[in-house]
Every structure is written in structure tokens, then in C-alpha cells.
Length: 307
Length: 275
Image 1: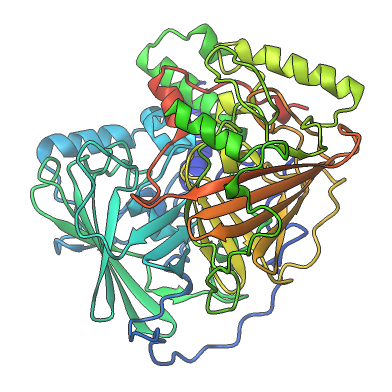
Image 2 (image 1 turned 120 degrees about the vertical axis):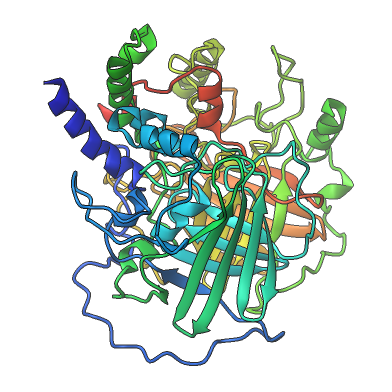
């Protein structure tokens, strides 16, 4: 009986943690009325990639919505090569360095990663609490690029709106720790390089439990290849957790999303006001995750967790 | 800091106490810069340094709350024009905010739920405005909230607000530019948000019109008109001035994580979920 409960909970937890926020019952979600629905649209006409669009200063014009996803929830869950199961599709490793496709954890950190991967510990993931994400999780979302003054703004689904400061050269004082770190941007040719430190160490890179610590230094590289394509890599350097820096990328190159494109339904969430990125407000699942956690770890339920 | 905030509140409050920051009638209007699309450029980080989050009406000191003037500029008496039953409900709401357990506290903000509009504007945390050709994006430091206001007709008319499936915490927005102002029209609200910590509230019939107007390089006038035939006897309007934040951009305040840090597990039932 308990095992069966855990399986059920696992599937629910996956849906939650994979980034499908929980709507409060009674609140219709995006695309329903009021929005341009993606369902049933005719397949898009093939788009021939053109040259890189440019701003007046010659820098690439990234503006638009791009997605490197299209393989369901797969890579939200596990970054390394993995088999299917529990509603997760199998997938190849997203790690391009080191060449073996494995995250170069220090021994203690690998043990910790595997502990976090256990279903019975899923309650510990802040995303299940509708708390904040991690830059690493962006790879499974459509991303919308906007230019605003000295900022490049990257919006993604849920509550994510990253404001990249293109002018500042010095990171914030170490006493300020942020969920997505402190991002500072610069251009290297046609590549937007985002350098982030000042993490809070509370986040996970995926449901599979992969993590870095508050001392991580993360460098992302968004390279515009043509009018339709951006590639993204993220390099994580954290001597507290890993034996060497490592780099991963999206499941596919990020392609521009238009009505009817492969990931248009999710791209729509970034522009359609019918989408409200609520989660905590309707998070009735958290109670069950906590109950499972308490049972599994022999924690005596409190009056609070029973209500 | 408190004195500073009180002074600002007075400056931004009622028609009875006009202050220069209110751009009095007859003064030359500020001409804001324009975006490449020709819209008034409202972009940047803004913050309400005032007491509106405590109470939109003039009020005496309460535990943890400094006394201050109100922000209601219409009606002229500075009071929210409640129907009689609703005035009683507002008092009940306020009494319920004394509960220290967020689950028992009547203020949805105590549970870290969406504060709604206009409350999110003057909650006290900064927010950033990002304008594109087709929409205006608001990014809020408080719990990383964000909202999108289209300024074209790309999304057509809004669905029927009477259908509960179309209710939103922040309402459903349609925007337009009028002269130097961004005007945001909001309908399709759910009935669960409040206007402040004093228990001021509305129903699902709420209709809000927000008006953002640059009145100086670093001063953004914010007006919101509320209409709700189920709760109020007439529409009413608040006005305040938001200040540009220049030292740093948006940082973090993840409200639910703060509950966790306090040992409050927010696993409570969601009352609107079982109705």
C-alpha cells in the first residue's frame, strides 16, 4: 500500500517539479478563451533561416521567443543519459563536457545527488513548494528575449524573468545571495555571455537532484547562428561540488517559435496575458508530498501537516 | 526611514494636501522620452516608498503600522465608498489579520498568495517595466511575480468574466497608450485578493483601470480606479508617485521560502480549491 502511494505521489510530483505549475481549481489556464490557442493550428510553413538580425549598433538582435525543447519533460528530470520510466521518456546526456557525458561530482556530492533523486526525498525540492527555479532548468523552457535600456531580459515560463545587466562589471557583495544568481552580461562577437555568481545554493538543476552550491560560478553562452537559431551552453564551475568545470546544452538547438511551431504552446505562455503563473496558490500536492516524506523518514506528523 | 516614508505618503496622498510631486494643474507637463515605437518610455525599476501597503485610507497608528494620510483622491472625502454590508466585512477582514498563523490569518498576503492588482504595485518591493512593440512586461521583486499587458489587439476580447474558469489573481489585462500614459484595463479577477493590510477588499466583479504617467525623469505617477458594483457604491480612485530605483536592479524575495525558513510549511488546504 505504501509503495503504491509512493508511485502515485512520484508521478504527481514529477508533473509539479517538471515545471507544470498547479492551477488552483476554478481558474482556467492560458489558451482557453482570451488567448490564441495553439491546438488544432495548421502546421507552420517551413521558415528559411536568414542572416542574423542586428541592432543599430551591430549586435545580434535576439528579440523573440526560442525553444530548445520539444522532447516532452525528459530533460527537466535528468541531465545525464537515462532510461524511461515513471512517465519520463529516456534521453541522451545533455552534457557535452566532459566527453563521457557524466557530471563530474566529487564522491560525497554524487551520494548527495542520488539521495536527492529518491522519490521519498522529492519534498525537499523547492520547486515542489512553488519556490524558485534554477538557471539550469531554463533549458527545458521556451525563452523570450527582450531588450530594455542596459538590460537584456530573458523571460521563461513560471515566474522566471531574468534581467541581465549589460553595464555592470562587478558582482554584488557576497552577502546578497539570489536564487538565479547575479547575472552580468557581455558580448563576445555574436555570443551573449552571462556570468553569474552570488547563488543561494538552495536550487536544483533538475528533478533528478543535480545541484551546485552557493559558491558556483556559472557562465552561459547564447550564440545566434542565424535568424531562426540560437545555441545555448551553460558551464558550471564549483570546486565545492565538482572535480572540474562541466558544460551542458539544450536537447536541440533553440529555434524561433511562431504560431504553430513545435513548442508554440509553451512559447505562448510568455506573451499571452491569459497565462497566470500561479503555483503556490493551488499547491494542494505539497501536503501529500510532505506526508510521504514524514512517513518515509519516521517524522511524527504535526497538527499543521495534518490539516 | 519611517519618517521619510511618511513624508512621501503625505506628498502622494489626497487632494487636500497638494505637493509639488503631484504635478499641480497649470504646471508644464513633463515630456517623457519615447521608445522606438513612439510610446512613452516607462522602462526602469520603480518603487512605492509610502504607506499604501498598510491602508489606502487615512489611519491612526496601529500595532506595527505608522499613522498616515490616505491615497484615495476620489471620492473627495478620501474614503472607499463601501456598501454598508461591505464596510462590516472590511472590519472583519482586518480583525482576522491579527492571527499569527498564516493559515488562520484572513489576509491572503500572509499566505504569500498573489497580492493582486493594484496591491502588487505598492507592496513596497521594486518592480521593473520592460516595453516591447506589442506588450508591457512587469517583473516584480516580490516572489518573482510577473505579468504581461498586451498593447495591441493580438489577443482579441477577453472571455466572459462571469465564467469562473476565466478568473485570475491579477485579472486579465488589456493595455493602451493615451498621450504620455500607459493605461491598463483589468477584468476577470478572482475574489480572493485585497487592496492592503487593512482588510480593504473586492469581489469577482472588480474592474480596475491603472494609469502610469511619467511626471519627471524619476517620478512615475500611478493611478488606479476601482469599480465593483457588488461591493462599492461608486468607482473610486487612488493616486501616488513611484520613485525610480537607481542603485541596483531587482533582487529576490521569495515569500513562500521565507515561510519555510520560519518553519511554516504552507501545506494547508486551499479554501478556494474546495469551493
